[in-house]
Length: 533
Image (cartoon, rainbow, N blue to C red; front, top):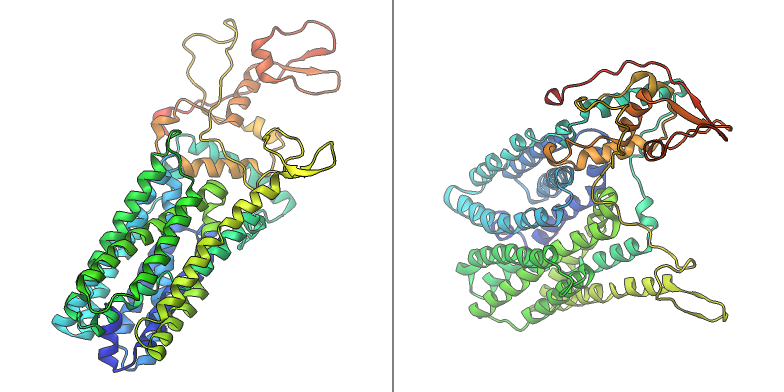
């Protein structure tokens, strides 16, 4: 809806406005890895606040533009950067608060784009037609500025962790140890480790090819309806498109969330089917000429499968790389769509103008169909992982998952939650009414040789906790061991190795042989009240 209004205001062509709209979307996708890296290094809330401010400033600069080429900077660049910062921060915050129900929550996140298309299209067109180009966009600026205030409400999920003080204590002790060596243990700004997976690389290629044409109807639908004499229904078509997007996200989300053993559909095939149907619907658009019912039917079919494609693509990426690597990988997936959108949308516009009619949609549908078929290479890659030589010397497909020669995928499944099983203590050593210890002995931590990846796992666990009530009865493994070490004597063998804490509780302490009992120092353990945490 915005592009025809800009074309009328600046008296320019359809191809020129297509370049501006595609550039804004491409910039938002291109800087997505930078935004995610900045959020991981600095602050998600700060990035969200800055994103809301930058987006509002971009809309304000667009309202004061007096020449068309100024839109490439104000709308194409500034608005694109602001949208990327705002959108990616919401993805990271959802990842912090939700893990086990991530698929269900993403239904509302992805369907928000559809609601935005439906609501903002009517709002922008109504504002520009009522009070003019400049004042209308300034009214849109005030609305967009609300994202600035919404970003201030972002809070890290680790602030609500019941063992937050213990985790901070561990981090401080690690920092003291690292200060002696003066080594920078911060993660790299750009981490390309996820690109080592061939499955991820195939997914990036398929997404990039599909992006050449899958978004073309979103940019040119209103203009195409006006050329066919249906200018009064252009706004209605955009509203239907947004509602269909939301319906598609909900439908595909129900299939993913309620995937049972009796009826199980892989997310890869959901994504593949959705993008294939988008290509078929774009191809069918070339046969619609001035038919209002035909446009409405196309909008609903295309919108449902386009929304389902964006949701299933996100969830399939989440399934492949797991929660720990999802943010970085999703940034690369979005970045792979930037250049194709910036090039593919104007190419379709040039073909429509040069060849007449809707010839450009043939190019768009071909790219989408090729992108859907390229996902079959993931299946070929899986089969190649399972092929190896057995005793007869022939290279064949191995169906056994326990075969020692079978190659594994790049990303293994992660445990759903952290559960620490507390071994039963001896009745003489533990009084019945002893309070639960939730503090770490400072002397014990200072003597421990903590591995580098221990605190990274603690940070990850803290980001995924959504409710304190679900984990208040559990202790972190390091905290649990340190409390037991402080209270119980240390059993060591002749080589100086400690005996397992679990075996200390399950078996009787040996009186002779290769084990010897070493009395541990008397350590003072401070008990933190659970209510204060």
